[in-house]
Length: 363
Image (cartoon, rainbow, N blue to C red; front, side, top):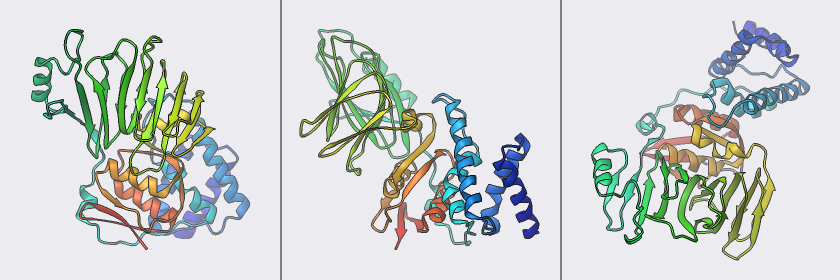
């Protein structure tokens, strides 16, 4: 049976490389990718030229699919993400069988994140924004809608998403903000007439209302991003050495703590630490793919990938023995954690354990 499946796979891939597969056969490719790893088959009988061609064809199909959809795109099926992560396996000519090993209860309980956040008032009171009762209390106090009365004192509010949470809010100036997991935004109950400032820890996507007379600034621990009206993503987690500012539309100016500045154009990204590295990126909008329910990895260090998983699946992460590998791909954030870890283990040739709520890479 195994040899017959190999023969069928070889014929199908050759047809796939020639671009002659129909929708049904594309679905069969999906099934092969899904079942072959668990059956322990390999692709050693393919030569390097065929493996390289297969890699190129897979990327072209994935790229065409990405180019044809907006950021609010349909959820990719298994093929669209498994094939991307599986490319290193194809290049190496391997499909490794995962051994049956005990699964810790923490891994079984690790669930994808949900729409939830807490609001912390200046008095230190915490309200759950996922609770109807708390929302009613906030609305009665005039906190949830924000202030419009200029005679009222300006108060600072704070919204926090926990690990395994995300949230969308509208600021007093009607600007929209999406917060990723384990993130915090602080903002005033009413903006000043000549400036709008918010403070971010973690990751946020901003769709800023255009008010030229009142520039909008996002301050983090490492930098300040100043805009007039635009769409951009900021990744500013404390466990990452650099802030990543990715501009989708408009124009922003990013300033480091050393006062180094860069005026950004759409489609560019600034990595800001002690210095600023500024470069054009392919598919800038995908750096905010988390908004529509995907992880997006673009030559992302494995250590950073694991931290992203930890924040989303509410796990502590030990990266002491993580190799300096890079990950590329687009993965839905609603898939079971064990499926993602299995792929990372196979492609990066590592062993990952999840025990007592802690994700760890074995040496």
